[in-house]
Image (cartoon, rainbow, N blue to C red; front, side, top):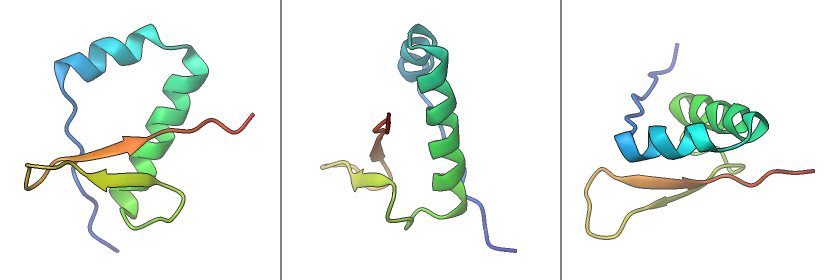
Amino acid sequence: MPNKRTILKTKTFSRDLKKLPVEIQKVSFQCAKSLSENPLDPLLNIKKMFGYKVLWRVRIKLLL
């Protein structure tokens, strides 16, 4: 079984996530699950944050 990564969220992220529509929240959780299982998944739009050693950003795009 491959190693899963731990995803930490900030208070700001949690607060802002609650303000989003439920459908976007669900997609966010799906992306987080994919990220923890396979951070190299080409479907994830992930980039390392400049100036940080272990901070990455993920951009979520809804396909409607």
